[in-house]
Amino acid sequence: MKVFGSFCFFCASVLSLWLAIASAHAEYQIVSRVHVGGDTGWDYLEPDPVSRRLYVTHGDHVVVVDMDTLKVIGDVPDSPGMGGVAIARELNRGYTANGTEDTVGVFELDTLKPLAKWQATGKRPNQIAFEPVTQRVFSFNSTGRNITVFDAKTGAVLSTIEVDGRTEFFAVDGKGMIYDALEDKATVIAIDARAMKVISTWSLAPHQEPSGMAMDTATRRLFVPTHSRSLLVLDADSGKILATFPIGAGNDAAKFDPGRRLAFASNGDGTLTVVHEDSPDKFSLVQNVKTEPGARTMAVDPNTHRLFMSTADFGPPPPPTPEKPNPHGPIVPNSFRLLVLEP
Image 1 (spheres, rainbow, N blue to C red):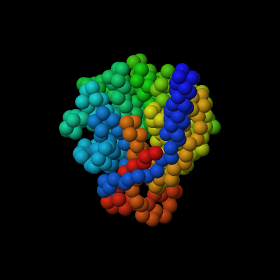
Image 2 (image 1 turned 135 degrees about the vertical axis):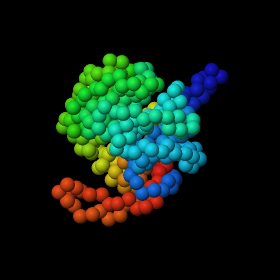
Image 3 (image 1 turned 90 degrees about the horizontal axis):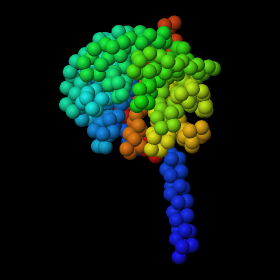
């Protein structure tokens, strides 16, 4: 009986391992499209897995979608600039980066009621982070080439961090460190949130124009996509590039799903690159998914492992000019939507 029991335990262990591997490598596909409407642009999406809400930036407001029913359930008005959204559940507050008026908007999470606007110390806030250890909000001012640090409760400006670069997306490790990519410098900076200063700068050469960032906080690995059509894996403590994968054109985001140990790079050419973290030092390409043109930003629901991506339809582009050599076509009215992908 002991031999039989040991054999059964062995078989169960092998089956569990096989199911885990199969689940991690299940292919993603579009399973639903959520019509939102409108003909204005968009940028980032921010999930709140606890409240089951997805915050979708859209023109001068933020659309709120229920991540389970896939229904639009609310709206945060007066948020011009198509930037990011940060969530501070312990404070019952959300924050918006309002790029066209150089402000940070503050709203209640439960009611979506606007509470205040704080003036940034740099031009065009585009990304925004809530750092939980210090209870501070960091506004990444892309054309201002600096970062404004606010007290998350009072809105008091605590510091302005000069970075001399065009900030892109960030990652927060939950232990007091923030990482950000400087697009025009092709570098990643490490910021001590307590000291409110940059403590490390790492070159991404020969790769150019980093366009997003995600992090596995458990293994301290950063995933950085670039406009050089590459996804880089970095050690968050040394800045060393550990792996490189090819991706599509027009990337604007990376995300990480800790439950499935998958990193994603969403590309405006209508592709999604999926990479598996086999171990802290080994990574493998899983899939290149066909999505839709324009679906360059995304969010991951860690509970269901769904992906959400924003896009719309586009009309014919206008003739190129010296100022806009590669113009985009106009957004077709009422075509804005969310793509929902599942494995």
